[in-house]
Image 1: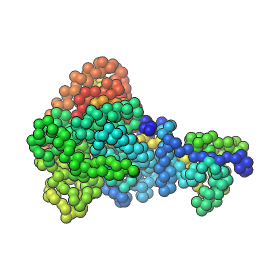
Image 2 (image 1 turned 60 degrees about the horizontal axis):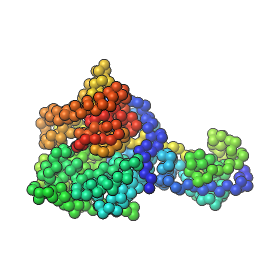
Image 3 (image 1 turned 90 degrees about the vertical axis):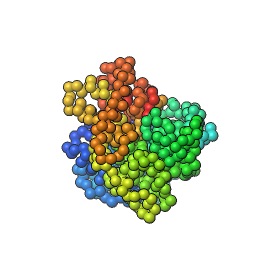
Image 4 (image 1 turned 135 degrees about the vertical axis):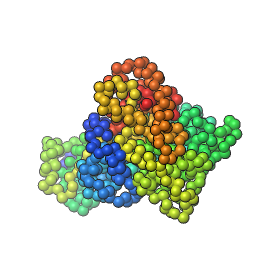
Length: 441
Length: 164
């Protein structure tokens, strides 16, 4: 079955805003722009969200940010029954919605195909994020897709990798294969033991030697469920485990895409009457705090209805209280619509902008202003203490990549790398060359 | 027009197309050419009637019945012309002389006066794809389309190293 290549439309690289970065030209402060994004995204995961009370000019201000963060189809869903639908920005969002519908259909075909490859080898993967949460949205177009995130039993990982080898030369959505669920835990590669990984925190603290990851997998597998995707069945995590993964993934990624918080709001609102909050939060108090804060964030920024239905609420409301710095930090990210991983190599930045202090300052600030990632990366509690120490520590932790970046750049040709113009998130598939030279610092 | 004399029986292409039917339009993705199109209701109805056995005259009659308004045959030809140019028909059409000689704009203008139904219109969806929801590329994944996760570096083609 032919899979669609990454560049699915010759026109898809067209950027209606030219080469301007997503955040450029805005007269509002980032946090205000982020708040405007939040107003558009509030309740957008519901069947009939209310019309947003924003002007056409305000919509024009945030449209580029919605595009940049993959939330344009959601934006259309929010305005589709309002007078804004006929505006120029509305037309752009409508087009994004149309594309997203087609992409979703293609993505579903790809999921089925990939599952058939693995099942032919006797491997039963668990799909996380992506379609696993998209299926709850009222329209298939609303949740854009990136990779197909599949988790397989750790002892089957090598076989699964071999089974998917045939996809290597086929462009399309990439399959992100994970051995178990370690990646969705604390986010630190070194921390592979269950007791330190959020997802596994409700499991025994001292699992048998050698069987650690498989034991964890088995517990999660037991709680997973099979759901229909057309005539195919797809295995997804139990609602509690999935909500926790969504929360941890959002924190790990710096919460820069509003749609990730919509995912969480949707997961919370679509939970069943037997949803086990204790299982969702887990036994590790730190992780429970992170998860609760993230849900609280969805409540505060997007109006997620955490209390409905209220009678099965197993934990205190106060647990959803969030620290003072969290909401502004996330709104700043939304106002920037630039992922932490979108920053290019520090060395490239230095070379290209030594004579442009304004850009240089912005680049440095983008590297510094990551309190969410720093908190998560340093396994810090979500409290009201200043984040600066964690941000310093996180910056130091990431600076170990500097020598490898330098080596790679010297090897590849410093000038060539430095010459490539940086183009941020908006449809940068073909132009993301410079920042791909090494992890961001 | 006496297009029937040409014995044109258009057939819609089905292979390598992803079709999404919505209430007032049809979205089509061409897996071969990687193009996305949006057919308005009139164009979509014409396309759906292209079964390889129905003449444009009959298509016009059927579309008119569906839309509960008379549909001129010229409207069908206009739709067919667009469908053909976008490779949404199985075989190339032989257009009648009157239609072949007209520019698309002329046809639309001519239809604009007479048509009761909406002018069939197919637009290409060229908006930028919403940015991927994916976070970053891990070790072994191509890094042409997205950034490597922390800990990994892009060797020009793939992310290498130990990604977190």
